[in-house]
Length: 215
Image (cartoon, rainbow, N blue to C red; front, side, top):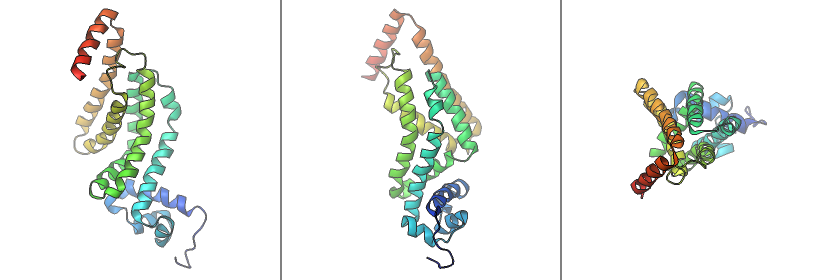
């Protein structure tokens, strides 16, 4: 460690924030110790002093960033009372997170994990923080629905989370297509509401057919 650049209180937190900012601005390929240290305004030796390696810093930063983002939305998730409301919230959150550059952090970590498996567990954990919130809401809003016994809530929550990260990548090559995909997902909520509004006999017939289809 440089004598001219002593470790100061808060350096570790600054490096975590700088790693997230570097992923936003330069992607996984540009997230070097030099780039992250420059973003944090510290000597790059402090990256290795606090985290051992750039990969360790990136994995911790990924989970740290996701935990902070999710914590800010818990009240909004708690307020959801239906699947259409959840999907609409998802659209708003995606737009907000994309505008702030946060979705790209997960997308970049997912891309990096394809060639560097050591990034995968932390990336999955960060995505899991979002998935857990979605699954909690889905369990609540679908609990009394006739569809509850034919829908894999856990699997659906993971599909939603994967879709919202995927939209970020898709948007870069086909923005209109990404918007249409998001809108199509939102219509799923309308279909569920229509099903719930059917009479008992009609719901029973549809449910029986769905059970046969998924068994």
